[in-house]
Each structure stands twice: as structure tokens, then as C-alpha cells.
Image 1 (cartoon, helix red, strand yellow):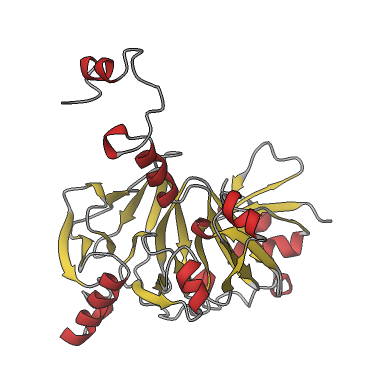
Image 2 (cartoon, rainbow, N blue to C red):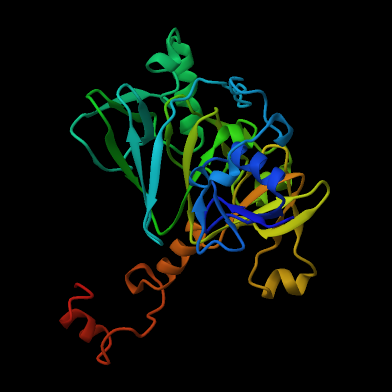
Length: 347
């Protein structure tokens, strides 16, 4: 009987309905998901539902005692395992819980707070060549890592946060502008994600932040992100930030989605990204959507953002009288004099 539904959260699509056997298999593959079926008062964490425990090898599981399969990520087993929670709605931050010896990496300036037992260390590059995860890496590896970060618009340095005490310790990272923080396990996405240049916020130690070149000239010129995007590789958790609300699409082979060029936040590496003209001359000139749309062709998942930072910054600039923009009329009826008296404008 098909009755089970699963989801990773409010920003993720629902999976189902699934029958009992398929539901057990899904629960074992996605233990962090929430589940619901007819008769349950509310959604429940998968791990707290006894009916989803594996019953036999026929349910898609191996014999009792079989060890878990190695990660399918490009860096199997190299990334630290971390626990986390995402707090807030439109101004979110992520709180990471570390065990002794575990580390998280983050962009410079992303720190919100930390426990005293968490030590900060600024490293050259993306931090993937520091500590146990990068033992034996030389100066050239670090130099190449730092160079990739500069190309994608990031700082030469990354901050590594390591729990050097006992028990649990927490460190939190805040998003730089209003939007959504997404937690993604890279091993669930083939070990690689292609993201907009400033998407990476934080992640487990061992995650590599690299560059992805758009090979098509038109895509690089008019694709909204230029020729260079971020490439996140590894098998652990990464936290990426998007503007506004995020929606996820799972494209089938050959299925195409046309998107505003600035709204592409991330996609699987096997998704083909291209651009096409929006239509005729009238649509290009008066449509208000620019001359090109991004086209994303499956198979693979894509994540879209509703408010690109460039769009928000453009509206703010346009509404700033001091910067040459138009006065929207929110100030005093006395105009500029009223703004000065009210403290909204200076001489």
C-alpha cells in the first residue's frame, strides 16, 4: 500500500507516496529526512519511526552486521562529519555542533558566535589542505587553492574553526544578506556542486572550493554569473546561501527549464547550462527581463533563488537619492528639507 511521504524540510520537495518496503529503503538512504503517513498527527523524524527500521535483506538492506558503503563523493571519507541546525526564516544563520577534534571552515567575516572551546585559525586557501584532511599537502597546493578563491571573488584566506576541548561545542555562521541557507551533503549530489560565485558560506573541513569555467562564450557573457562559478567538491556537509526563497527542481533527461540569468543559484555538474534570446526585439527592449534567459537541461537537480543580490542592490541604488537614484516619496512632505530635519539626509 503506497502511503508514505518524505521530505528534507519546508524548502525541499516531497517524495512519495511509497509503499512500506520502498519507504524503509528511502529511510535508510536518507536518515535525516522527515516522514508522514495517513494516521500520523504530524511529520516525524525518520529515526523515531519504528516501522521504517529495516526488517530483512528483502527490504533493500544487506545482512545484519554489513558495514555501510563508502561515500560516493569525490573525496570519500575525507570530510569531517558535523551536526548542525539552521535558525531563522528570512535572515538565517547556521549553527554547527562539533565533537572534539572536528573542524568547520567558513568564509572570512561569516562568524556570528562560537563557544570558547572552539579555536580559530586563518589558513591560506580553502582549508582543505590544513589539518589531518590535508596532511602532506605542500605550498603549491595551498597556492593553487588560494588562486582559485581569488578568481571566484573570494578572499585569499579561509577561517578554520576547530573544537579543542571536551564534549560538544558550537559555532555559528550568518548569511551576508536576506535569503535562505541550504545544507547539502555533497556525497548525496555526486560529490560536486556548481554554484554562483558567492554561494559558499561554510562547510566541513575537507570540502574544496574550486572554480568552474563556462565553456560556451554566450553563456559566459550573458549567463548572469560570467565565465567563472564556484565548484564545491567533497563528501561532507556544505552550507550555501541564496537570495530570497529557494526552489529545487529535479530535471529529467532532456527536460529544459528557462530561468532568469541571475536566479540560477546551484546545479548538479551533469546539468547543461546555456543561454537563449528571450524572443523578439520588442521583448528584449521592453520586456524588462534582459536579452537572454538561462536554459538548464537535465538530468540533474537545480536550485533557483527568488532574489539575486544584484537585483536587490540595483533596487537599493535606484531608490537612493544621494546616489543619483529617484526619491520614492517615503520621506517628509517638505521634501529634501524634511529629510534633513528628520535625519534621513545630511548636508
